Image (tube, rainbow, N blue to C red; front, side):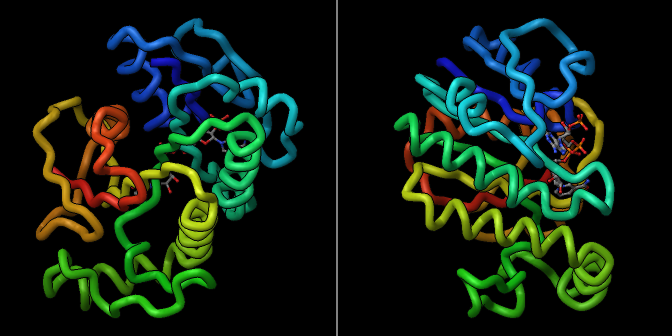
Amino acid sequence: MKLTIFAATGGIGRQVLEQAVAAGHDVTAVVRNPKKLSRQVRTVTADLAAADPSALEFAVDRADAVLSGLGPRSNSESKIVSQGTRAIVQAMQATDVRRIVVVSAAPIGTMPSHGRPKLPKHDPGDGFFMRNLLGPLVKAALRKHYTDLALMEDILHDSGLDWTVVRPPRLTDGPLTGTYRTAYGRNLRRGILISRADVAHLMLRVLEQPETIKQTIGIAN
Ligand SMILES: NC(=O)c1ccc[n+]([C@@H]2O[C@H](COP(=O)([O-])OP(=O)(O)OC[C@H]3O[C@@H](n4cnc5c(N)ncnc54)[C@H](OP(=O)(O)O)[C@@H]3O)[C@@H](O)[C@H]2O)c1
């Protein structure tokens, strides 16, 4: 497939890049700092905080799918995921590219947003500990970032594109196993960790699974 990978210098993005190249896909990486790329591939340089629409259109044009591992590197970038994803979506709409796979986070299923004001209080996959102790603590600590991820999900819902949102719990730099658990629209019971490599594996795997279009997918080891 012809794939365009945004944030290919990040933890998940780098894994998506490596696995996509290893699988023989034709890859274009979109990054703000090409020197950080782990290998040489066709590259488009763009800062998604202030991207030139024509550069993004060039990057996604004729892609079979777009993948994004975009995330904030600091608190001052707390709106970058929605801002960047909006720009990516606009470029895809302008070039008639339909398929996009992005990373969100496990708590977003219970994070109300403008587009999804009425959500269940608890994720059906979360057990007592996650619902009552860890979940509220993490949400309070990362509220700004989660608000932005929820907005990103709204943007995709409204986009008319063929999106898939992957919602991982805490990320690790552990190895690729390919033996993780997944669930549509909910988290996984006792699923508190997943490696970035396995998240990347799922992001590429869903491209061959049309039933994952317009779905959020929980993942955990
Ligand atoms: N950490 C966790 O435990 C956890 C859990 C659940 C979900 N998540 C979510 O998973 C996502 C990815 O996580 P990760 O650990 O792979 O992230 P990461 O290593 O921090 O990578 C973030 C990527 O976004 C890029 N980026 C940031 N601002 C940009 C901008 N203005 N223009 C272009 N690119 C920009 C970075 O580029 P540079 O390399 O140039 O900085 C980098 O490639 C994040 O959204 C995070 O919220 C994280």
